[in-house]
Length: 171
Image 1 (cartoon, rainbow, N blue to C red):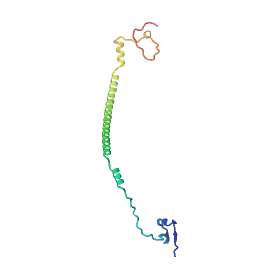
Image 2: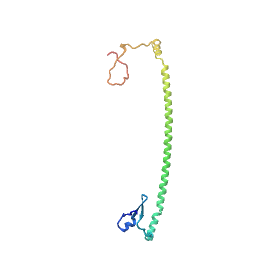
Image 3: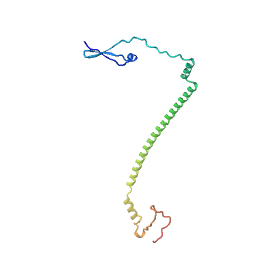
Image 4: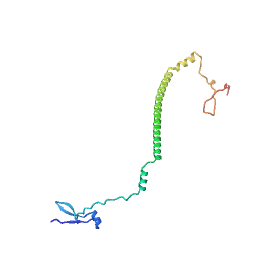
């Protein structure tokens, strides 16, 4: 015959009602729990709400209802929010159009800069400095300056020199 073991979880009667003890019966190598007693079937207690006064009911209904002032406030705030959203969208459209305009103008600037550089190269390559030198010497009678024609000035400034009158002869 199989031996019976009883496990008691709590001691007092109220706890036993919540946590019943079980009898452990070994059957085919498993433990089957069976309650030691059967709880009497009781009807659950219906919790009744205490009577609420008419004043309390009125206060509750007022708290749940929205007043005209509150509805007006919500309406004004909703209209203001919609107006601000529309204004924001218009600003975003303006910014987007300005960005597109800037991109278009930058593209034109790059095109004009490249055309300007190409024209400068064409002009620079078309000028023959050797032809200019020979024309100046042979046709116009120009000569290189000699050492006696060069006058040297010493200035404190590191900039350039402007000539406002004739340079005096001599040292």
